[in-house]
View 1 (spheres, rainbow, N blue to C red):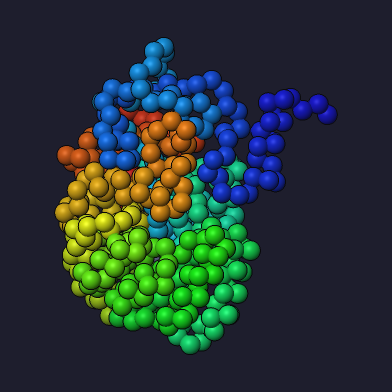
View 2: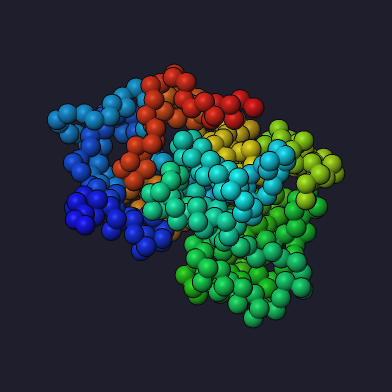
Length: 427
Ligand SMILES: [Zn+2]
């Protein structure tokens, strides 16, 4: 059978080879260049550009500046940004058929649909890249999105995390073998739990030798390490040379200074994750790991987390990235964390935008591909109805989403955006 050239090129582009990380992948059919008119662009690197046109060819931005000719998308009157990056999600974590927390490891058809739904809602909310930290169920979702079979953000996944459980976690040699196993399974990064849940007190669950082995082995394999750490584990992760600390609750000012000195990224959560648990308390309570005492502990930790984010923002040189820890109920509402950081922790709105764009990309090792509006980078472009620098709640009003040169959302400002997304936001 004769296959038309156009279809053949699509088949080649999404064939069996297309299972790697999607960043940098070409859009199957490049087509002509697309011109986007703007009045305000926040470029992701801390600059505001006025009245520029963005020219996109294939999956990439080819120019930012004056341009003539017909306009394909008119985003004047909106605030245009690079697609946001969420450094910490659990993209497959969903509620089950009984409406209760079902975790992230389910493999039923419903779990698969829920995971695809989470990805779609996350993309519609303006997040074009996420790091999922992680579950083996991330892998088929990541690869289906990368191949263009379903819509969603680019996904980087840790596959199976290393759960610190004291001595029984294993010897340093066994831990190194576990890290290699994740790499072989297709991990883009390594997730390590070095503290117990904050709901249980947050004590350290790995020795310095165990943590050191994990981060060292990952580094040798060219993988980054993100470490779930509270209290003393924050310092231990920095000293072990790990890439990024997640949460960081109850870290001291000295701990934060050490992170800055070591160049360790910090990804604290000012609100969404705990707010989402409280909002969906009846759906979590009684499921594994969620007790009444745990919920009481979370309510106490929320103001401490506001304080942590405030202190982190005031620590010179500390690289604070944007991550929400989105679990069931939070997917598609990731941008609420911006509101929390700015409103409750006093973070400068431009700093908040940079944390989820160029700095977020740098933390993923992808600064040359995503996170900024600049020639040569992926055309991940979103637009907000409003100015986040003066009204942070405008992050809830994403009216345009382009990922890799493909438009997934383009609605008039003020329009009813997306029935399901609206319902989820309002809940
Ligand atoms: Zn998490």
